[in-house]
Image (cartoon, rainbow, N blue to C red; front, top):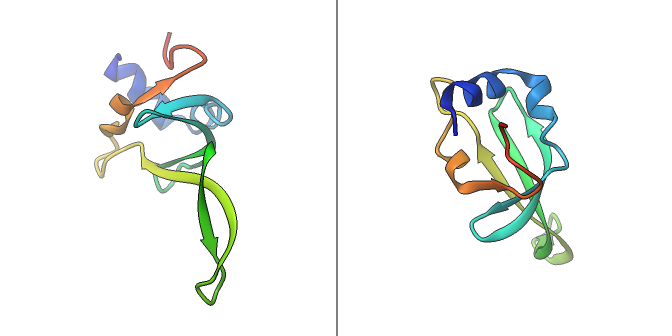
Length: 96
């Protein structure tokens, strides 16, 4: 992956928002990009099949929710993090 093009993409909020809805493979599981917290540098991905139990405020298991991963897409210096090496976009290349 071209590091210069990746850097330009993560610096552009509009480009990063365009990732929402794209299917990805991460750690051998299929996810979908569901949200972006650009200021915090987080890419949120959720799995359709794998579910986690969400507890209520008393610690009791209440409902099944999609497994979610919060991935830091840039490091403290603003450069692309290593997470990009672990993501595979299933609907085509990230950067043509």
